[in-house]
Length: 85
Image (cartoon, rainbow, N blue to C red):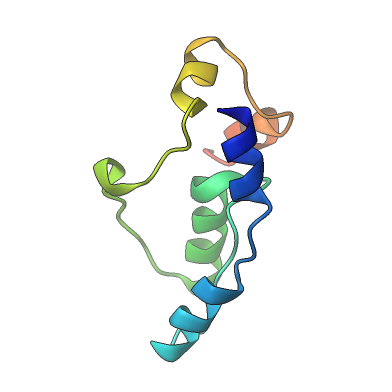
């Protein structure tokens, strides 16, 4: 599962950005570093807006759940946890 994850992380976000622009998006971010929740929280705070996620619809890379279950986290996990406050 590592090779597909690396391929996914190496893909350009340009096609997705173009789709967002065509629908009037004025802000976006990738989910690297602080992850989906961290970046979403930053955008919500900055725009004074809220968001709701349907977690069943959020795609997860193969192997990600197994990593969490094995307590293997990103080196930025401690900073991400601080964002909860």
